[in-house]
Length: 130
Image (cartoon, rainbow, N blue to C red; front, side):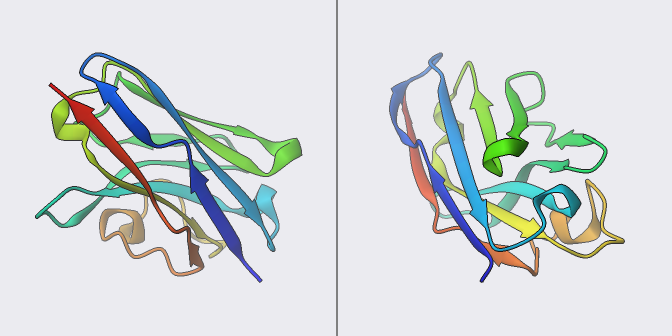
């Protein structure tokens, strides 16, 4: 079974930092593309970042570029999202998801459409106070 578990969310003041973790299992981690997504209150889900594990290619949404960093620990099959200089508009439930399509890259049509098809984690809430 493909499983992803996101954790690390919490309450932080504007300008603060948090690191989210996405622990994965049930698939070939080295062949996967992992994405982070978020859904803010009253808004549609959007792509935040992605990483292609095999070649290390990363991508960030314009709204988080320069503040967020995606990384992996391949030995632990875990993907991280380091979030710095957080803003109130970063408040959202954050999800990690996996795309196992060998042809998928980072970013992909499925990332832009927030339609990763291979599995989703349960989400972790990030609240940034002003």
